[in-house]
Length: 343
Ligand code: SF4
Image 1 (cartoon, helix red, strand yellow):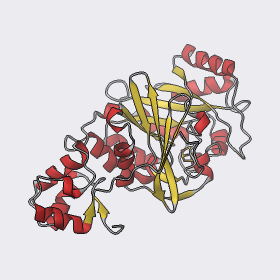
Image 2 (cartoon, protein in one colour; image 1 turned 90 degrees about the vertical axis):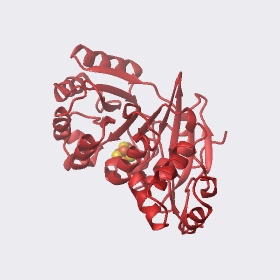
Image 3 (cartoon, protein in one colour; image 1 turned 180 degrees about the horizontal axis):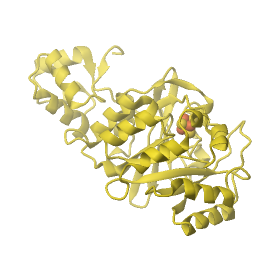
């Protein structure tokens, strides 16, 4: 069974190749897509409008590829964290965040991450492999709340722009009429800003973008995020300024706040200058202490003052509510290896 290739994660074009390979007519690709992404079957035998011969031939090389989560932990605030088989022997995590009439799933695109951001648990474990589009879409299809999901955010483990092809295939499956047929307005991709890949994402999709900034000063950001040396934040914002974020899509700037590091008014003023002319909103995020990192969260009052200063300077800023801290599911805490607290 292990040598069978998964069908989920394949776009319609790739399913057409599979149909040809298995001696099926071209339109069988559309039938398979409907079974996989609309009816969400878990076995090839469930694809009952394919002939028995076709199903047998398909089953010799392929499987549906759905994998249930290995573990579930639920926070006191209702946030649920799921552990899935990842890559390179490492598990990965997805987090479902319920909020009134919304249910957002935060999904992973890599096992670990190469970017080594100082404040991030995922970065601390290094990179163990890219997830396939099958492994990424499986998180959406296989969490128990799948049918209730209203939003998807690529903000879990990994840098999505470092696994661009699989992320683009997943977005295609999520948004295509033959796939899940979601509006791209329900999807947000977060990035540290790898310029070339980010431009491809901007040019080929209409999803919302979230950019991790965390400091407006290059040297300081470089200490927190080594990627600053290759992709300075000024250039990232410069690229984003060239796109329309006032109408169909939204740009968010992610800013984790640390005590004594990036939370004084000098930072607020410089951040406002950096973002001048870019149609965006700033999400101020509480830091959650992680082992081996000396950064400290800053006081609520400081966050409020910082937010108000940005708002006074014409930059829309809000403080993002923190969710799932007790199960290590909050921002920057995903590790994919610690045993989550059981339900
Ligand atoms: S913050 Fe994002 S880009 Fe940075 S190490 Fe963590 S997962 Fe990677």
